[in-house]
Image (cartoon, rainbow, N blue to C red; front, top):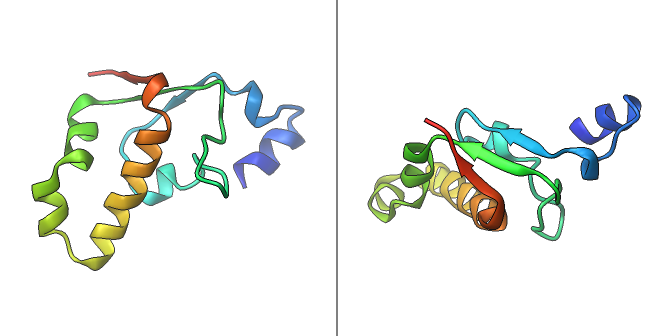
Length: 91
C-alpha cells in the first residue's frame, strides 16, 4: 500500500532515505521487506529506539511469547537483520 502511495506521489521505494520506527510491531515493519526478504527501501537508514531493538533480539522474551508473539519476533528479527548495515538508534 505504501509503495502504491509513493508511486502516486511521483516517488519510488529507492527514493526513501529514512525510515523512523516507533516500534517493531508487524503493522509498522510489515512492508520493510520485499517478497524475497530483502530491504524494500534499499537506500534508507532505519531508526528506532535502542531498547526496542534489544527487546526484539532478546531470546528470553521470544521464548516467553505465545505462538503469535513468536511470529512477530521472527518478522521483527528478519527486518532488523535485513537493515543491520543501515540501522541507527535514537533515544
